[in-house]
Image (cartoon, rainbow, N blue to C red; front, side):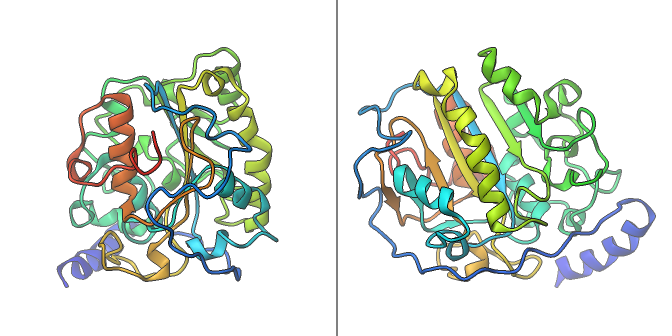
Length: 329
């Protein structure tokens, strides 16, 4: 009740300066149900980018690619619309009980990168607001833990852009929301910079990639997002940082389709489809076909990344289960 009252007040304030609003998710597409395998059970032989190394080793680069607004059952098993994603899930690792934190988009992006608990996020963020005096974070984030980092944002007109533009939505780009973060102006860059960094072997330790609103499946279709990944992910997987065996890639979705604002999704007993999203783990040491039905969440992704890069755990990440053992990282 307190959050709902705060939200009502925030809506009134937002008309003054927060500039909020979100497009509805793409229509749900039917998909075959996914059976929950035992944690980290390898079910296929290595035939792609995963399982090429037998023992975990030191990872120097972690890449997140965030897609939008689709639940596990809409993607996994849906080979007609998402053939590439399903082939990746078969060739690498798939978390089948991975939860977003809440609804809508922005709270998930901020919770995942800061570890801040759902109920402690600024109430205005539940409006998917643009960056403003009413909509920002003073908390620490993975972008400010001392490692090198970049956020690569497709269709963003200029570095660290705080305003929506065309198919670029700032609500899908977390660094500008962290008001105490230094380096946004030089490290939050248009997506085209990624190819240059890969070719020059200057990939940072942590990379956050957001396709534009069409290619992340928010405004576009599942097929469009799948085609974008099929075109762009091989550039990463064929790069020197990945070929050297020191890069792990995670593809996840901010939230499942549907679901109500403030929904408590990061609970082990939640089975609502809007709270469970596909998360694919790609690394040289992840055996091909690995599936884990262990409860994970966006906080687990943060904790796992911090563990791999030797960083201290932030807030809720300190108690979240990591994915390292399940996916042989």
